[in-house]
Amino acid sequence: MHTIWKGAISFGLVHVPVKMFAATEDKDISMRYVHKECSTPLSYVRKCQSCDREVGWDEISKGYEYEKGRFVLFEKDELEKLNQEVNREIKILDFVDLEEIDPIYFQKTYYLSPGDTGSNAYSLLLESIKQTNKIGIASVSLRSKSSLAAIRVIDRCIAMNTIFYPDEIRPVGQVPNLPEASQVNDKELTMAKMLIEQLSTPFEPEKYKDEYRSALMDAIQQKISGEEIRVAPEQQRANVIDLMSALQASLDAVKPEKPAAGKRKGKKAKDSVS
Image 1: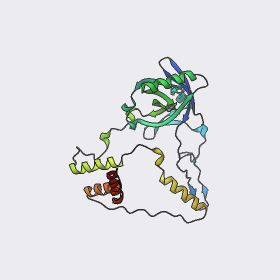
Image 2: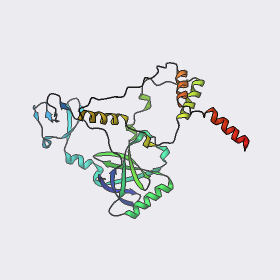
Image 3: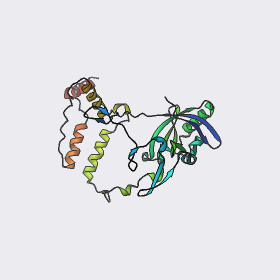
Image 4: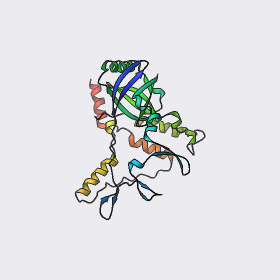
């Protein structure tokens, strides 16, 4: 793994040197824009519309548009002075229960390993979090962005999840067309709950596959080989308008198969003999 950040976790006066690694990877298949006529990849050009010419990186500043067409500009060193990343510190502010954090807050996960020194402090923090079953809420700055973070344990590793600030979460009240109150048919509700029970299973992440990525890779290989792209026909979905009919059809589709009559009789006969 490639180290993307070096710093320390602090809680109270305890200082734990750590290295940071990305815990996830983006497996999206990258596509480029290509000129159809000659198959040449198109390049991104930084062009000033007023000067009508390409602009080099040394001529670029960052700006905030406070009114239409009016900007305040910042140089790199000005932003660096405002950025807390120079502290290289993941500062734990509080410890909370994981159940208290709604999943909507979570962003990206990172693994933290012990720094070149401080292995004992790392082990101490890991075991303390694990045995108290708590999650540390910390402040951190990564890539010029300040963020909250959740410090937790995954197996034998301290992990950090960046999380949104509360004002970055849009209120549910902004969602249009939500029902004023839940008014459901009791029979439909019972059947829906039965369907949920039938579909309930332990979470096994390895059984979920990115079907689109798999199909796209197959299509890419077919094109490389000069073959015609073959796509499996889509299964026709029944156009069920009646909700009760849809629930019943769904339950019928997921019901476990009953044992054959012969097997049941055989078992019964065996039981009577014994």
